[in-house]
Image (cartoon, rainbow, N blue to C red):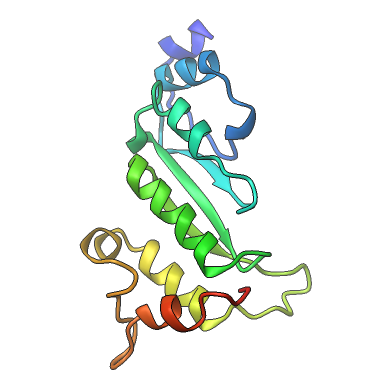
Length: 153
């Protein structure tokens, strides 16, 4: 591991599995010279990664982490918003990915497109809440939170 720390070449880490990371691994990952953020994923809303993310951010600065959030695959609006807000609270950059099947026959819903547009543009994500976000003239995304909160996306 020391040869990586002393190398002039920067490391680009994608697909780090946060669920199995321990404190020692987090410590050493933080010491690597990074080219970009460490990319992790929170695909399944049924698995709450909040405690694991808190543990990892003790060793890795949150600004060094970017988390893919899969929406539209067995998740509700509440579950999507829970994951995104937990990441915001921890200072980790979320990036919304809409679910597509292998045949690409599934078309993302308008909600999924609007959520991706809101979260994936940092200037918008930092400046307003999803409820106040207006992706189209005369429409606010608060509609999704009040009217369709029980639907599966």
